[in-house]
Length: 92
Image (cartoon, rainbow, N blue to C red; front, side):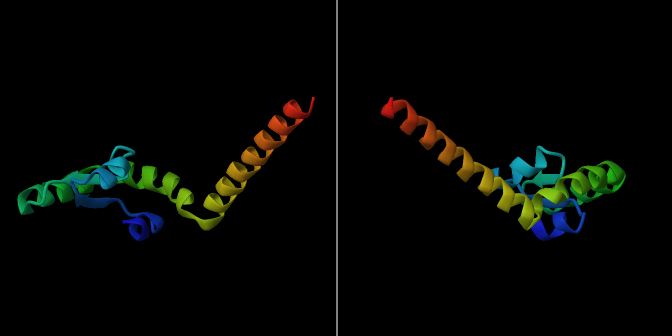
């Protein structure tokens, strides 16, 4: 799924919570494991492909390594700042 999204393609996936999280963002469709429902999902994506394309195109930057690396750096910096703040408060 992530490879497809990274290449700008919407997905069709099984109706599992993990995939539903991304489906709710408009990146694809989740369906029960059923050939008829899968076929209907293909038609739905085809009919609304422009909107899926736009949504996926905006989202795919979130899949780049730099995005996640900087997010982790910010989390660690926040933790360090909180620790410094607590240490300053206890030393006074």
